[in-house]
Length: 311
Image (cartoon, rainbow, N blue to C red; front, top):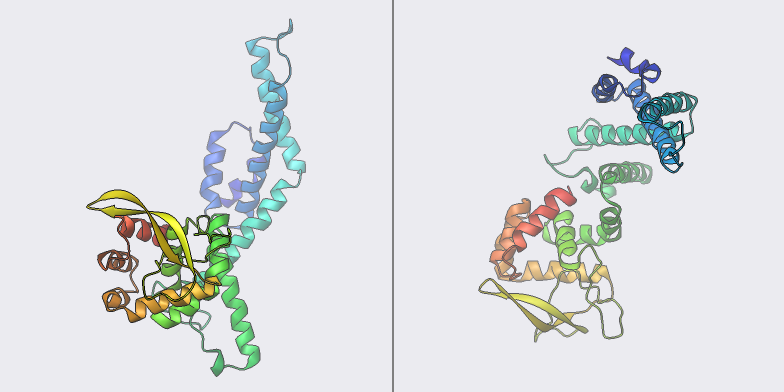
Protein backbone atom coordinates (compact mmCIF):
# COMPACT_ATOMS: atom_id res chain seq x y z
CA UNK A 1 0.00 0.00 0.00
CA UNK A 2 2.81 2.42 0.85
CA UNK A 3 4.46 1.73 -2.49
CA UNK A 4 1.31 2.82 -4.33
CA UNK A 5 1.20 6.04 -2.34
CA UNK A 6 4.53 7.21 -3.73
CA UNK A 7 3.18 6.81 -7.28
CA UNK A 8 -0.01 8.79 -6.83
CA UNK A 9 1.46 12.11 -7.92
CA UNK A 10 1.87 10.80 -11.46
CA UNK A 11 -1.73 9.64 -11.88
CA UNK A 12 -4.66 11.47 -13.38
CA UNK A 13 -6.09 14.19 -11.17
CA UNK A 14 -9.60 12.74 -11.37
CA UNK A 15 -8.53 9.18 -10.49
CA UNK A 16 -10.88 8.56 -7.55
CA UNK A 17 -9.36 5.12 -6.96
CA UNK A 18 -6.03 6.80 -6.28
CA UNK A 19 -7.69 9.12 -3.79
CA UNK A 20 -9.19 6.09 -2.06
CA UNK A 21 -5.78 4.41 -1.92
CA UNK A 22 -4.30 7.62 -0.54
CA UNK A 23 -6.90 7.79 2.22
CA UNK A 24 -6.24 4.19 3.27
CA UNK A 25 -2.45 4.47 3.20
CA UNK A 26 -2.49 7.78 5.08
CA UNK A 27 -4.03 5.97 8.03
CA UNK A 28 -0.73 4.17 8.49
CA UNK A 29 0.84 7.49 9.42
CA UNK A 30 4.14 6.76 7.65
CA UNK A 31 6.25 9.64 6.25
CA UNK A 32 5.52 8.40 2.72
CA UNK A 33 1.77 8.44 3.35
CA UNK A 34 1.86 11.90 4.90
CA UNK A 35 3.91 13.27 2.02
CA UNK A 36 1.51 11.70 -0.49
CA UNK A 37 -1.53 13.15 1.26
CA UNK A 38 0.04 16.59 1.52
CA UNK A 39 1.09 16.58 -2.15
CA UNK A 40 -2.36 15.50 -3.29
CA UNK A 41 -3.99 18.22 -1.20
CA UNK A 42 -1.59 20.79 -2.65
CA UNK A 43 -2.56 19.63 -6.13
CA UNK A 44 -6.26 19.99 -5.34
CA UNK A 45 -5.62 23.45 -3.91
CA UNK A 46 -3.76 24.58 -7.04
CA UNK A 47 -6.54 23.13 -9.21
CA UNK A 48 -9.15 25.10 -7.26
CA UNK A 49 -7.18 28.30 -7.83
CA UNK A 50 -6.93 27.64 -11.55
CA UNK A 51 -10.64 26.82 -11.75
CA UNK A 52 -11.45 30.10 -10.00
CA UNK A 53 -9.35 31.99 -12.54
CA UNK A 54 -11.06 30.18 -15.43
CA UNK A 55 -14.48 30.98 -14.00
CA UNK A 56 -13.54 34.66 -13.83
CA UNK A 57 -12.60 34.66 -17.54
CA UNK A 58 -15.35 35.43 -20.12
CA UNK A 59 -16.40 32.25 -21.95
CA UNK A 60 -18.65 33.51 -24.71
CA UNK A 61 -16.12 33.49 -27.55
CA UNK A 62 -16.67 31.73 -30.92
CA UNK A 63 -14.36 28.85 -29.91
CA UNK A 64 -16.14 28.16 -26.63
CA UNK A 65 -18.24 25.01 -26.38
CA UNK A 66 -19.00 22.24 -23.91
CA UNK A 67 -16.23 20.12 -25.43
CA UNK A 68 -13.58 22.85 -25.19
CA UNK A 69 -14.57 23.62 -21.61
CA UNK A 70 -14.27 19.93 -20.69
CA UNK A 71 -10.85 19.69 -22.35
CA UNK A 72 -9.73 22.90 -20.60
CA UNK A 73 -10.82 21.53 -17.24
CA UNK A 74 -8.86 18.32 -17.79
CA UNK A 75 -5.82 20.29 -18.92
CA UNK A 76 -6.00 22.54 -15.86
CA UNK A 77 -6.12 19.52 -13.59
CA UNK A 78 -3.07 17.97 -15.21
CA UNK A 79 -1.19 21.27 -15.08
CA UNK A 80 -2.06 21.73 -11.41
CA UNK A 81 -0.80 18.18 -10.72
CA UNK A 82 2.55 18.98 -12.36
CA UNK A 83 2.80 22.33 -10.61
CA UNK A 84 2.10 20.68 -7.26
CA UNK A 85 4.87 18.13 -7.95
CA UNK A 86 7.33 21.00 -8.20
CA UNK A 87 5.72 22.40 -5.07
CA UNK A 88 4.41 25.77 -3.90
CA UNK A 89 5.36 25.17 -0.26
CA UNK A 90 1.95 24.12 1.02
CA UNK A 91 2.74 20.39 1.12
CA UNK A 92 5.87 21.02 3.20
CA UNK A 93 3.87 22.99 5.76
CA UNK A 94 1.23 20.24 5.98
CA UNK A 95 3.85 17.52 6.45
CA UNK A 96 5.50 19.43 9.30
CA UNK A 97 2.18 20.00 11.02
CA UNK A 98 0.92 16.41 10.64
CA UNK A 99 4.25 14.99 11.79
CA UNK A 100 4.22 17.19 14.90
CA UNK A 101 0.65 16.11 15.72
CA UNK A 102 1.56 12.43 15.35
CA UNK A 103 4.61 12.86 17.59
CA UNK A 104 2.51 14.58 20.25
CA UNK A 105 -0.17 11.88 20.11
CA UNK A 106 2.48 9.16 20.48
CA UNK A 107 3.94 10.94 23.51
CA UNK A 108 0.54 11.17 25.21
CA UNK A 109 -0.14 7.49 24.46
CA UNK A 110 3.16 6.49 26.05
CA UNK A 111 2.48 8.62 29.11
CA UNK A 112 -1.01 7.17 29.57
CA UNK A 113 0.29 3.60 29.23
CA UNK A 114 3.02 4.23 31.78
CA UNK A 115 5.80 3.70 29.24
CA UNK A 116 7.54 6.86 30.42
CA UNK A 117 7.35 5.86 34.04
CA UNK A 118 4.66 8.43 34.86
CA UNK A 119 1.59 6.69 36.19
CA UNK A 120 -1.98 7.87 36.28
CA UNK A 121 -5.45 6.59 36.99
CA UNK A 122 -7.10 4.77 34.06
CA UNK A 123 -8.89 7.24 31.84
CA UNK A 124 -7.27 10.26 33.45
CA UNK A 125 -6.17 13.20 31.32
CA UNK A 126 -2.42 13.15 30.70
CA UNK A 127 -2.36 16.91 31.15
CA UNK A 128 -3.54 16.54 34.73
CA UNK A 129 -0.76 14.31 36.05
CA UNK A 130 -0.29 14.45 39.79
CA UNK A 131 3.44 14.83 40.36
CA UNK A 132 5.13 15.31 43.72
CA UNK A 133 7.87 17.76 42.83
CA UNK A 134 9.09 17.81 46.44
CA UNK A 135 10.34 14.22 46.10
CA UNK A 136 12.45 15.08 43.06
CA UNK A 137 15.59 17.03 42.47
CA UNK A 138 15.20 20.45 40.87
CA UNK A 139 16.37 19.12 37.50
CA UNK A 140 13.99 16.17 37.61
CA UNK A 141 11.03 18.36 38.50
CA UNK A 142 11.85 20.70 35.62
CA UNK A 143 12.07 17.76 33.20
CA UNK A 144 8.71 16.38 34.29
CA UNK A 145 7.17 19.84 34.03
CA UNK A 146 8.32 20.00 30.42
CA UNK A 147 6.75 16.63 29.63
CA UNK A 148 3.51 17.68 31.29
CA UNK A 149 3.32 20.86 29.22
CA UNK A 150 3.98 18.89 26.03
CA UNK A 151 1.20 16.46 26.86
CA UNK A 152 -1.27 19.27 27.47
CA UNK A 153 -0.48 20.98 24.17
CA UNK A 154 -0.72 17.65 22.33
CA UNK A 155 -4.09 16.66 23.75
CA UNK A 156 -5.46 20.17 23.17
CA UNK A 157 -4.14 20.54 19.60
CA UNK A 158 -7.36 19.37 17.97
CA UNK A 159 -9.65 21.63 19.95
CA UNK A 160 -11.13 24.92 18.69
CA UNK A 161 -9.04 28.00 19.44
CA UNK A 162 -11.57 29.46 21.89
CA UNK A 163 -11.59 26.23 23.91
CA UNK A 164 -7.79 26.09 24.09
CA UNK A 165 -7.61 29.76 25.08
CA UNK A 166 -10.23 29.26 27.79
CA UNK A 167 -8.38 26.26 29.23
CA UNK A 168 -4.99 27.97 29.12
CA UNK A 169 -6.40 30.98 30.94
CA UNK A 170 -8.04 29.01 33.77
CA UNK A 171 -5.90 25.87 34.06
CA UNK A 172 -3.81 26.94 37.07
CA UNK A 173 -6.77 28.21 39.09
CA UNK A 174 -8.80 25.10 38.22
CA UNK A 175 -6.01 22.77 39.33
CA UNK A 176 -5.74 24.56 42.68
CA UNK A 177 -9.49 24.12 43.17
CA UNK A 178 -9.10 20.45 42.26
CA UNK A 179 -6.64 20.02 45.11
CA UNK A 180 -9.18 21.53 47.51
CA UNK A 181 -12.25 19.61 46.36
CA UNK A 182 -11.13 16.49 44.54
CA UNK A 183 -13.29 17.50 41.59
CA UNK A 184 -11.30 17.21 38.31
CA UNK A 185 -10.18 20.57 36.98
CA UNK A 186 -11.80 19.99 33.59
CA UNK A 187 -15.18 19.40 35.27
CA UNK A 188 -15.00 22.82 36.89
CA UNK A 189 -13.74 24.45 33.71
CA UNK A 190 -16.68 22.85 31.91
CA UNK A 191 -19.07 24.44 34.37
CA UNK A 192 -17.35 27.80 34.00
CA UNK A 193 -17.65 27.44 30.22
CA UNK A 194 -21.36 26.70 30.50
CA UNK A 195 -22.04 29.58 32.89
CA UNK A 196 -20.09 32.18 30.90
CA UNK A 197 -20.33 30.98 27.29
CA UNK A 198 -16.61 30.16 27.21
CA UNK A 199 -15.81 33.45 28.92
CA UNK A 200 -17.79 35.63 26.53
CA UNK A 201 -20.70 36.37 28.89
CA UNK A 202 -19.08 36.99 32.24
CA UNK A 203 -21.25 39.16 34.51
CA UNK A 204 -20.11 42.80 34.51
CA UNK A 205 -19.77 45.26 37.35
CA UNK A 206 -21.59 48.60 37.20
CA UNK A 207 -18.47 50.24 35.74
CA UNK A 208 -18.27 47.67 32.95
CA UNK A 209 -15.37 45.72 34.39
CA UNK A 210 -15.53 41.95 34.78
CA UNK A 211 -16.94 40.50 37.98
CA UNK A 212 -14.82 37.38 37.37
CA UNK A 213 -17.86 35.36 38.48
CA UNK A 214 -17.30 32.18 36.47
CA UNK A 215 -19.88 29.98 38.17
CA UNK A 216 -22.99 32.15 38.44
CA UNK A 217 -22.83 32.20 42.25
CA UNK A 218 -25.38 34.61 43.69
CA UNK A 219 -24.71 37.07 46.50
CA UNK A 220 -26.93 35.97 49.36
CA UNK A 221 -27.37 37.70 52.73
CA UNK A 222 -24.18 36.12 54.06
CA UNK A 223 -21.94 37.45 51.29
CA UNK A 224 -19.72 40.32 52.47
CA UNK A 225 -17.79 40.96 49.28
CA UNK A 226 -18.48 43.03 46.19
CA UNK A 227 -21.69 42.56 44.25
CA UNK A 228 -22.63 42.76 40.56
CA UNK A 229 -26.23 43.00 39.35
CA UNK A 230 -27.37 41.17 36.22
CA UNK A 231 -30.44 39.89 34.42
CA UNK A 232 -30.77 36.10 34.65
CA UNK A 233 -33.19 33.38 33.63
CA UNK A 234 -34.65 31.12 36.32
CA UNK A 235 -36.88 28.12 35.66
CA UNK A 236 -40.00 27.64 37.76
CA UNK A 237 -41.89 24.41 37.10
CA UNK A 238 -39.89 24.06 33.90
CA UNK A 239 -40.82 27.50 32.56
CA UNK A 240 -38.23 30.29 32.14
CA UNK A 241 -38.64 33.58 34.02
CA UNK A 242 -36.41 36.63 33.65
CA UNK A 243 -35.19 38.22 36.87
CA UNK A 244 -32.67 40.75 38.12
CA UNK A 245 -30.33 39.16 40.67
CA UNK A 246 -27.22 40.07 42.65
CA UNK A 247 -24.09 38.02 42.05
CA UNK A 248 -20.77 37.77 43.80
CA UNK A 249 -17.89 39.74 42.31
CA UNK A 250 -14.24 38.72 42.59
CA UNK A 251 -10.89 40.36 42.09
CA UNK A 252 -9.61 37.52 39.89
CA UNK A 253 -10.48 34.19 38.32
CA UNK A 254 -8.37 32.44 40.95
CA UNK A 255 -10.51 34.02 43.68
CA UNK A 256 -13.65 32.82 41.90
CA UNK A 257 -12.36 29.24 41.78
CA UNK A 258 -11.40 29.36 45.48
CA UNK A 259 -14.87 30.56 46.44
CA UNK A 260 -16.46 27.88 44.27
CA UNK A 261 -14.28 25.21 45.90
CA UNK A 262 -15.28 26.52 49.32
CA UNK A 263 -18.96 26.42 48.35
CA UNK A 264 -18.78 22.77 47.28
CA UNK A 265 -16.69 21.71 50.27
CA UNK A 266 -18.61 23.51 53.04
CA UNK A 267 -22.22 23.17 51.92
CA UNK A 268 -23.72 19.81 53.03
CA UNK A 269 -26.03 19.59 50.04
CA UNK A 270 -23.04 19.11 47.75
CA UNK A 271 -21.56 16.16 49.66
CA UNK A 272 -22.84 13.63 47.14
CA UNK A 273 -21.52 15.76 44.30
CA UNK A 274 -18.00 15.55 45.71
CA UNK A 275 -18.41 11.84 46.36
CA UNK A 276 -18.96 11.26 42.64
CA UNK A 277 -16.49 13.86 41.43
CA UNK A 278 -14.68 11.38 39.19
CA UNK A 279 -17.61 10.82 36.84
CA UNK A 280 -18.72 13.65 34.56
CA UNK A 281 -22.38 12.61 34.31
CA UNK A 282 -22.69 11.90 38.04
CA UNK A 283 -21.04 15.24 38.83
CA UNK A 284 -23.35 17.18 36.50
CA UNK A 285 -26.55 15.48 37.61
CA UNK A 286 -25.48 15.72 41.26
CA UNK A 287 -25.15 19.49 40.93
CA UNK A 288 -28.60 19.75 39.39
CA UNK A 289 -30.23 17.54 42.03
CA UNK A 290 -28.55 19.62 44.75
CA UNK A 291 -30.24 22.71 43.33
CA UNK A 292 -27.20 24.44 41.85
CA UNK A 293 -29.19 25.48 38.76
CA UNK A 294 -32.86 25.56 37.80
CA UNK A 295 -32.40 24.91 34.08
CA UNK A 296 -33.87 21.41 33.49
CA UNK A 297 -31.21 20.77 30.83
CA UNK A 298 -28.29 21.98 32.96
CA UNK A 299 -26.86 18.52 33.70
CA UNK A 300 -27.11 17.39 30.08
CA UNK A 301 -25.42 20.57 28.83
CA UNK A 302 -22.62 20.34 31.38
CA UNK A 303 -21.99 16.63 30.69
CA UNK A 304 -21.80 17.34 26.96
CA UNK A 305 -19.21 20.10 27.41
CA UNK A 306 -17.02 18.01 29.72
CA UNK A 307 -17.15 14.85 27.61
CA UNK A 308 -16.86 16.37 24.17
CA UNK A 309 -15.41 19.88 24.27
CA UNK A 310 -12.87 19.30 27.06
CA UNK A 311 -12.14 15.59 26.55
